[in-house]
Length: 538
Image (cartoon, rainbow, N blue to C red; front, top):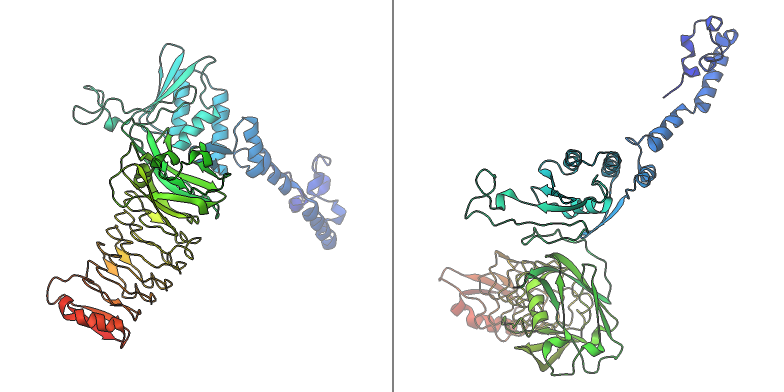
């Protein structure tokens, strides 16, 4: 591209010597004006203003020339070969960037004009996946793609949605995925000998695009967070396999007897499946526990975000247990909830409270405005959002054994800042996997009075001296810690601190700072020699 213009007219020595004036009219002006600086400058300025060659180059490169065009122009090319920029996968929607989208367009264009023999298909798939791809003709009007790796969701979606197989009309196909390093084979097969692998750990996709799940799949990547509001609670689970090789999770809800007759709990299980619980699904008080709960079976194991929407959470309870013993037959929802919950990443709604169950039978014991034992014995819990108690902090007063024996490894900064009504938190973190406690963790919990065993059983690598600073209504800190750490207490009326923390030797001293002249000072001074405490009044 790029025609001669007046910008190079200096290269023309004498206009009269040009043999074809018509074809080169754009590169010179009449020689009678060539010696005039003014005319030359005017002509050059005019050409700079009117010359469209650079714009034509831009239009060509950005719209018509596939190797360089971008954006909407690339979308037009995609329409020509029937390749969309957006692609839905089991992990969510993908919007291709220009570079990847251009590759897919060119790939589809080549596939459209390729032969349908095994060699051509093999060559195409090698371009798509790289090494380790083979085509096998099954001699029954079916071909089999064999990959020596497990394709991810993106690769599967490309092949099954874009029609990139250049196979003949009427020819079926299937996809066999094999990991040689895990598969048993015979001599010279380059597979594994006895005691090294299993027979055919495969994952086949048939021509109807039906996925047969890998018996031991790689964990799916974490799904993207979904915005939620006060009417919707969302949490992440990792679908676990039961004895029948089904991937199950559960939601242990219970409805109050006086519940609104129009109540609905709309559950989105995160895999495209939904379920609605109405008032008719909830039993009368005292009936068998799990008839009001919901369980779900996934086609494939992995991580999913469950969203539950309700108009009136205040009439809804969550079942809880004070022990780890659960009957999976009688209490499947609660059992799977405790064993599949991974992340509490959105604020919990304002439930009525919790209801205790015992061996599959509902108890009449319900606690309003309580979260006691709610996430106790959760075996996979990895994280909790900082705003988890956003909607409940001003109303819920009981947090006893909330994360008792859970796998939760850490608490985010500020998680209890809105818990202005927290009264009892005994055993809240007892025996959890938390290893560090920050400063001012309970600084806004002005009503906190009982915290016996609250931090007991933790294998703490660090505990800030001000972890309880600001909790000014503390009365009982018995068995508070099972390890030795300095503390600052600003509560003036602590009357019970028995076994506040253990000690191993006479040198194993800790310092506790207390309000001068307070009941707290009196209580701890009496225990100082017994528990090897240094009490400093300030």
